[in-house]
Picture (cartoon, rainbow, N blue to C red):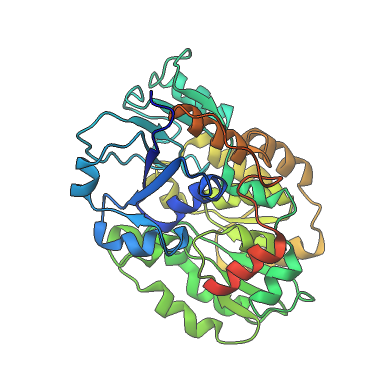
Length: 382
């Protein structure tokens, strides 16, 4: 391989959160003149601008035809997308969550078409091997962790600073409601009356919708325009609808999180703060959620089924934030491989895949931002 040749990496994403998974790695490598990144929304090219809005004004967004004709040294995605390319390339899968949904932890198809599999944790790796989708000695295996959540444990984000940027008082308890996407989600089941009740409490409320919940197609949102539905319920100085694709700043701001079943619920465990789970059996079935993950989320949270018991659980969580702390810490250690340093491992794996030595480090933590910088970035998107 010609070491002087500039390497090209194509990053594919279906939604903004897929890019958010890769964003810390992009930031860490973006100053390296030996590497050029291009971006493609292969499933919906017309949405590429929105999907990669956080990649920067100079991001090289390409369409399917241009991508097919160009020579890339690596193709990276955090979902099971597969852009057709005419030239051979190193195919890299980095996954985009730890929720155990949609077959990620029990694949029915072989994974051997991928040249690198960047696993978030050993549990998923073992599940893929047990499912027969991957050989235990596959040279594609890399145990990386999740770069996106490094900022939750490295001091990058600070609760009060994020709340001030959002226009919310740090002196009030903050409740984050972050349901997953699905016509069977808690958002569709009881989201509106739940928010109406939350607005009666002396708390801040942050609502973080999944990207797919903003898609009007019935299979994603149930056909409801959720941003338009929710905004009137949040019209005050103590409630906001989150606008950033990256949920991490909102996780850092929250004292209690309410979800149904989402990867973000597990990510919140890294902060060891109370979690309330709205149990929706129809969602578990429709999203094909691995039962191990249903069990784990139940262990670390208080489970509810309706508006009244959810409000009561939130009040208990505010009063006793240490309840279930040991369980939260144990599950977080299981699901996130060495959080705080995943970005560097991912950077190293990517350099290895394209045949380059790692660039000299110019920051203490690759992909990290000073707290004030991350807060300003959030302000620009809010």
